[in-house]
Image 1 (cartoon, rainbow, N blue to C red):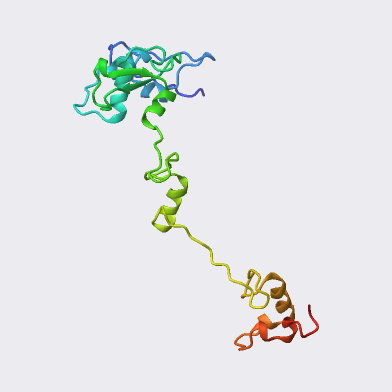
Image 2: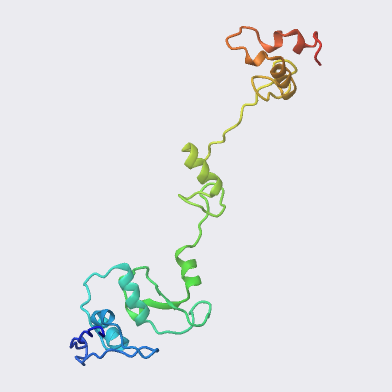
Length: 207
């Protein structure tokens, strides 16, 4: 038996009140009922007109105000760099709620970013600013130590035997490896220091 076909419900466009008909797909099939039941307008033109005539809020949000600003300002090239087909609208006085035509400027996205994200100078050294009024170097110092002027100086100890820069355990690399091979570093709680070992001090067989 063939499957039962559901009847097409009668619907009208919410904007022009024209009766809605199921569209014919490119392969010849009728529009699926699940899509037809969701449709409220006969085409995109009626949908756009209906959206335009919706009641507007007295205090629109940032996104809504910029949407209307882009529709108010005349389309064309960027008024600053001349780039064709500029899509952004810039508020000259900085108040995004002021959508008067004389306050709007057609501008490209690149120039718009330069206006609102102009990089300032560091308060200390004058280099390009990273955050909180500091450059990258002073910003990281402030983030780690709480003071942008703090300079952390590493304390390098010297070897107890030869006076060279210490590698580990108060010894340079050479004497540290000698003490490690001799097993002196493995003794826990011993009061003897590596410098007291005759082998490390040069009187033993090691060098």
